[in-house]
Amino acid sequence: MYQITSFLITLCALFLLVLAAPLPSDVASLNKRVTHYGRGTWFNVGEGACGDWNVNSDSIVAISAQIYGSGGNCGQWVRVTNTANGQEAYGMTRDECESCGSGDLDMSPGLFEQLGNLDTGVLQISWNFMNMDWSP
Image (cartoon, rainbow, N blue to C red; front, side, top):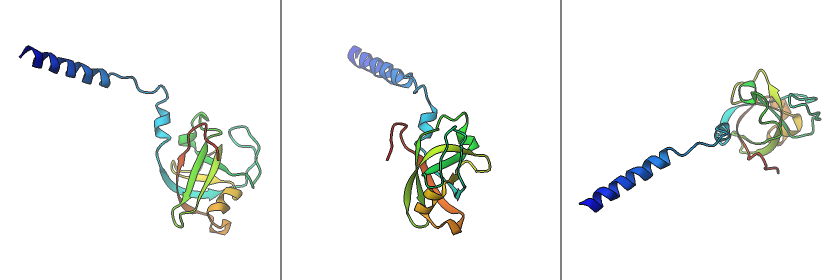
């Protein structure tokens, strides 16, 4: 009986130890694995909120102000999918989109054209952040 009690106490202690394990210091990094759904639009690029200059042929995205925050995603790649045709492309986060909803992206013409026609103006998209050190 003593061995069973001892075993159960040890098992409970291990369980509590696992529950007490600290979360990563950057809890926001867990949110970056989320797939977002929204509208994809395009804009003529220039100097972005991240402080870098780009041209329209660059693969650039502007993320919503809600996600942009203090710019922690600047330079991070995003995988964007046109949900209507399955086309996929990658863009680098270089700007903030004040008028975008949280799941929306504003894209450079060069990136938008990899997913659809500029005349369309708006695409239904899904997207997610890639790991910080990832690049195509």
